[in-house]
Length: 578
Image (cartoon, rainbow, N blue to C red):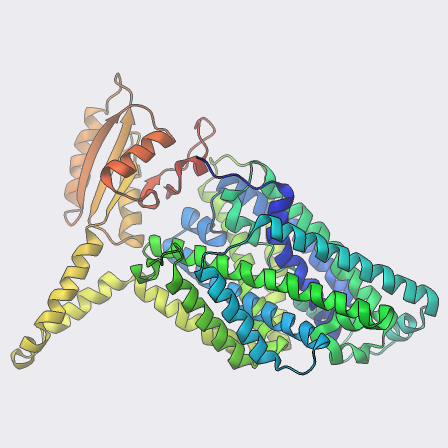
C-alpha cells in the first residue's frame, strides 16, 4: 500500500512552522543592527528569497528526492562535496533545535519568571529526544493546527499594534526614524541588517528534505507560501515595533520581543497568548530538527559516509543512536553559548547560509553537468549568481558583525568535517595502519596481529560491497568515466555493468571487445557485464535490487534525457553520476 502524500497546506505547515517561527526573534535582532531601517533589510531578504524560490524549484524539480543540498551535490558533484553540505545541514539543524528551544523557554519565562531558562531548554530538548526515540514524528494535522494558530496570533498582534499607533500617533516612529545610527551610515546599516535578517528565512530548505512525501506539484507551492508569509510578517513586525516603542527598549526585550509588543499594545492577556503561541510553534521547530537530522544522518550512513553503528533501531523502529548523538551535540552548544541568542544565531546563520550557498552552487552544477535532465522550472544564470552573491554578503556581514561567533561555528564544523573526511578515506587510512603494523619490530608484532587481522577483515567487507551501473551497452567512454567516479568517491572492488535490452537487441562486438580492454585496465576491480532481458523500468530496478541484495543508492545511471519515460524519483534513490 503506497504512503499517502501530503497536500499543499499540510506540507506548508510542516516547513512553515519552522520558517515563520523566526518572526519571534528576527525583528529584534535586525533592529539591534540596522535600527529604524530594519524593515528595509527584511524586505531585501524577501527579494533574495524570491530568487531562491526558482533555484530550489529547478533543482528539486529535476531531482525530487529527499536530502536537500546533500542530494543535489551527490547527484551533480562529488561525494566529498555532498558530505560537507550534509555536515553544514546537520549544524543548521543543531542550531535550529537549540535556538528554538531557548527562545521558546524565554517566551515561557515571560509568563513564569521564576524558572531557569537554560535548565528549561535542556529539559525541552530532553523531552523531544524521548518523544522521537518513542517513534513520534511530525503529525501533519498537528503541524497545520499550530501553523494556523500561529498565523492567527500574528494577525491579532498586528491589529492591536495598529490600533495602538492609531490611538497614540506616530511620535515613536518619527523619533526613532531620526535617531542617529551607531557605527556607520545607512548603507552599512542596511547590509549588516540584511546579514542578520537572513536568519529569518532559515527553514526555507525544510520542504526539500521531505519532497518525496509531497503530492506532485506541491513543492513549489510550499516555497511560494513560505515566501509570502515571511515577506509580509517579518518586515511588518519591524515597522510596527519602531512605531510603538523607543529603539533603546528593543535590546532589553530581544528574547521575548513579540510578547513585549503584545503587552504594550494589548496588556498581559495578549502577551500570554503570544507567549503560549511562541512556545508551541518553536517546539514544533525543535521537533522538525530532530526528525530532519535523523533522516539526513540515516541517509548518510546508508551511503557509507558514517558508520553503520548509527543504524541500530529500537523496538519502535527509531534509530535512537542518531537521536542521542544529536541531543548531546545540542546540549554541548547550549552550554558553550550559555543559551545566549546572539552566539546561537551566529552558528545558526553561518551554517544555514552556507547550505543556501551550496544549493545555489548545486543549481549551477546541475545546469552544466545535468543539462539533459528534465525540470519543470528554470532559474536564469543571472538570478542564481545574484542570489549566491547575496548569500556570500550575508555570511561576510555576520562574520564582520561578531567575529567571535565564527570561532563557535568552526569549533563544531571543523571536527565534524574531519570525522566525515576520515570516514570517506577510511580504506586508505586502514591500509596505512596495516602497513605500519607490518613494518613494526618483530618483538611487538605478536601483540598486534589480532588488530591487523581485524583491520584486514574490515577492509574486505568494505571493498566487497557491489555497485551497479546501468549502461546502454554502446559507449565504452562512459564506462571509463564511471570507473573514475567510483575510484574517487566509493570504496569497492566489485561492480556490475548492466544493460537492460529487448530480446532483439544486443551489444555490439566492438563494445564487448572494449569492455574486456577496460576490465584489464582496472585489475583491482572485479567488473562483470550482465545483459538483462526486458525494459528499464522502476519495477526492473526493484527486481534487480532484491535479487542481488544491492541497495538502490548503490545503483547508478547517466543523466536521462527528455525521452526517458520515467521520473528519476520513481527509481527509488538510484543515483545520477554522469
